[in-house]
Image (cartoon, rainbow, N blue to C red; front, side, top):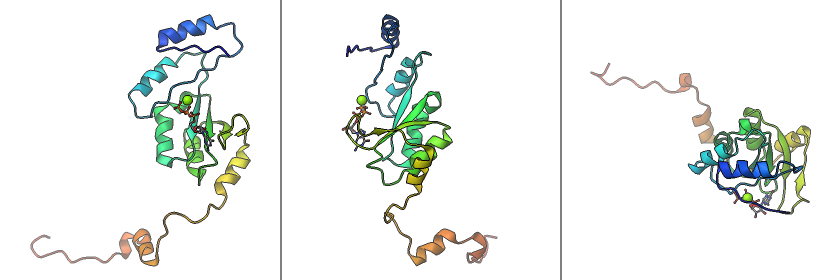
Length: 167
Ligand SMILES: Nc1nc2c(ncn2[C@@H]2O[C@H](COP(=O)(O)OP(=O)(O)OP(=O)(O)O)[C@@H](O)[C@H]2O)c(=O)[nH]1
Ligand SMILES: [Mg+2]
């Protein structure tokens, strides 16, 4: 497979022009963290209307991080999401939650390192089933005394008398 490199938007546009007769051109990007200032540059470079973007989201990271990735990587402008590392993720719900809130579509999942054997398409039903499946014991368990701290309503807490002179 012929491989070309493009370091900026002009070079990429020139290449796309050169390859316009090809049936498919796959563009891979170098990994940049979502908070890196170069992410914006990269996204601007890929803003060409002929490019269909797929965002690969690591399912095994924390929900807030997934949300941050989807916001920084402008998931709304992507054609779909690929969820990777399902085999490593203890829970799938945080990733599904982020995808639903960003109103995106999951086009594929990966559950291992083998390509293409570990790439799959999963139905919405299968994803939900997997998200709701019991996942062993949680990393943190409340004990009885902590339950009162979490669920106490303001009316239930004891009212302290106001000290004299500070009414
Ligand atoms: N267990 C597991 N490993 C995966 C999965 N997908 C990718 N990996 C591994 O994760 C590592 C990184 O994968 P890459 O495909 O290089 O990820 P990338 O996002 O292209 O990385 P950069 O180009 O550096 O941004 C490799 O060792 C992959 O084999 C998966 O679904 N499960
Ligand atoms: Mg890569």
